[in-house]
Image (cartoon, rainbow, N blue to C red):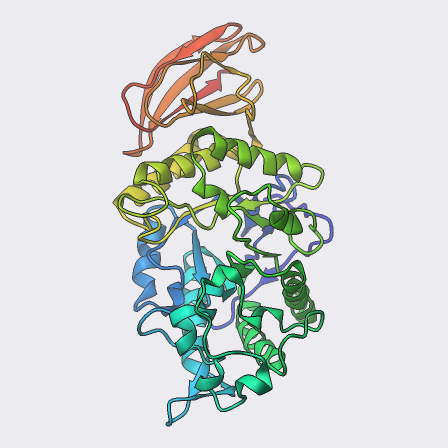
Length: 462
């Protein structure tokens, strides 16, 4: 077990309360030896997952879904604290007249949340939560939201500054709910209710070692809003003697946009960045953007997470093939986490997702992904066509080449004398095929055995 730690972080050994059968484990944190990845329970980990819902704590029998994920090798889910789906529980108690009292938190809501964390911890699954989901605060979901003045006994529109309707898309950020903090002060008196809700959440989550924190889902709020809540979470964590790792998720699909730099430029607030919106991109643009982000944080490298991999046949964000390609480009490209987005925007944890999650674990058994670097500009892949292949490598040790759909490229090993074994991972079926070894010191031709998703792993022989 490695014992180092990143600067400023605490080595946490937490006993998960409420889970008497769980052993003492080391809480998740950026890895000291490989700071672009996470460390959990004494091991550097690649976070890989998929799930059928974003607000997984709201579903019936989440243990069934988590068990399926774990059986496929998954260790990562997303959990928005959202209540906008039919049958969901909101975070405040409802009175007999149908309205809510924002001074009374819902035990059922927070019990569901704690149950999810407990079940996930039992299976070594990391939960990346989102405090606020903008889709709860506009259009139809806002009509049911306890913070809507007509739905509670605590204030009127005039008293709060909140209206009873926000008809435009939540991306317009019309609702001043997201401008309640002192620097904006566009509402009156709702911040204490927000504090109360977040405090209850943190009382639960800070007991668990398997939680990462995101402020918002696809936000177009201000930088000050995210910074306020990031500091608030970290302060509450420090009061309990633990460390919370926080990020913000911006809505801009171009990760070079200014909004994303509010996260990337401030590692003192945001210990990792979620770059899920890059997963709207395809082909080499998708790869190039990830490499841009890695280079942008190179002076202080930290994990780049993808809690949403978009794409599903019949959906609006690309095809199932797009999702699988994005999944593998992120892994070979050096991202810290990958999770298939829920249907219909993604493939969730369907059989295709399960197969590729398994294959990611097979690749880990063949190739040291944590020690590798992506070939950002494809300098070692010769005669490569657009989007034909992607490479990660450890010089003089190993090379892994991902082929999205067959192909024929040449790998430049002219500076690498010696013999390399070659194995082919059939990523669609999670199977490995051996192949004749190749001699280094020259250019080597690589052709997958068949069409489809393949990864060639070349390992230098002793």
